[in-house]
Length: 399
Image (cartoon, rainbow, N blue to C red):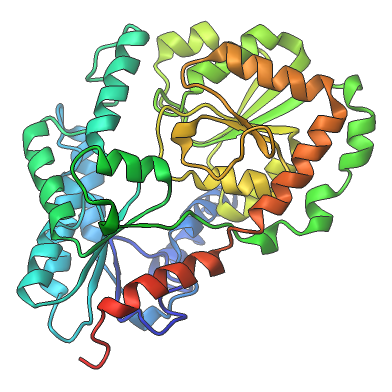
């Protein structure tokens, strides 16, 4: 979107899966089954809309970080971000018009950009870490787990707090995807006028009216002959509320089928306790294969503990699925219109919402139609226009 507006001068990443590049050629030298699976996975790392000459990558940093996380007994999970950030800061020069980065990987680059007199923009991809930390502390305690399990923050928490606070302070503008994120920032000392609300978007070309509704009406007329189908998209883990969904699925029993998309980080002990025969784990899928999975379902359930602005919730709306999620999802779901907003940590609330959709066909249809219409308000084109309008006044494009 920045490239389309003529604002992108350089896109820096740790790895870009170049079309026809050496990595792709190597992948296709592998046995066919392995090559196909790996190629599908790596396509998520391709930025096809950006010209190759505007992309700079540091793949050795990503490789080093993966090895470090795998073999270190007590890794700093932000070492890779910091290292990448240092390299990016070395690329910056006064020939650029500004710097736009992500929280956790922008401190050195923001410092350098300030030295050069460049405007600095920061995406806040999730709620403020102090709120997230409190929520996860309660979540670990709730499930009787040690906090070291999948700790989303580094061991040197004090250093993390100082560095992230400086990142926010250095920004001329912070971009947030939801009011939930903005509220968390304001509660931690960030002026609201420093934050741009820009909800995520969805590629509607993947969810045409014909595709989204294809076969649905016949299915609905005969739905009582099969279980109600629930889908959830996102990494399986405590923060995503996966255990609450599994507990609800236990209560609902054979009246539902649940399909989970995403990597699995659930503790084995709890997974064994709550994983039932009505659960199917699909794993990771490329972005363009998600719509077909969503069309399988009757409802999207995502009882997350906290997010930023869950992209999957927009995709579910576009597919015409009533969405059952929490206010902490940062979604644009309207309670009782496109789905239900339920409290965090409430399998009973999940059961209640799902049961209402199962038993009231007219309600399901109204919410389904409303969901697909709601998604049309949040395209990537709208996202890009909002972002460009907010960034342009800060930029010195003549430099």
